[in-house]
Image (cartoon, rainbow, N blue to C red; front, side, top):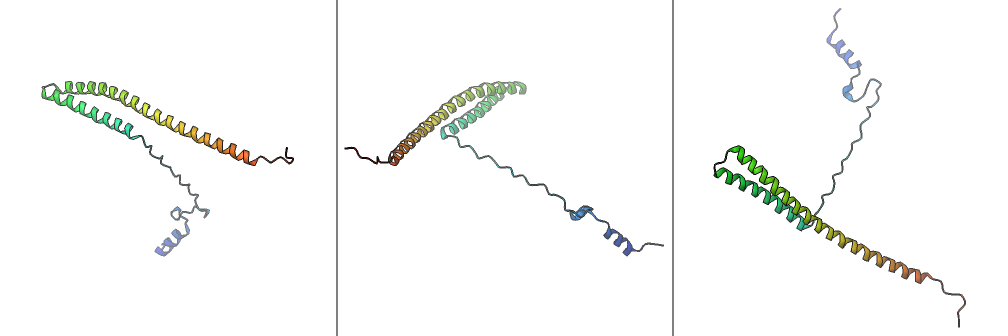
Length: 146
């Protein structure tokens, strides 16, 4: 006895498949909750610090290109050009890093000091306002002297 094409399709229709999102118990598969990753807010540095960082980066690239160019023009071997550029980049990078670090530390400490002074001033004003409100709330004596 041969199975007809209709019998085969009927048999396949009875077999549950995982393609429709249900397992054999006809229970929906639990979906994993989507985790939203919050991107950190960009940090805005003072303009002078940005200028110092930009200046350092530009100077470092210019020194490296100058050393490589002068070495190439003077006829140095490629390995010599590489090492000269490497030493110049490390030396100048260290000096510029120190400059940028000192400069940005000074600027940021100055900004922090200004914010602390502003907070202290606001705190003093707030305390004065609370004292004034407390004095207004003092009850008047029931018996007047005099």
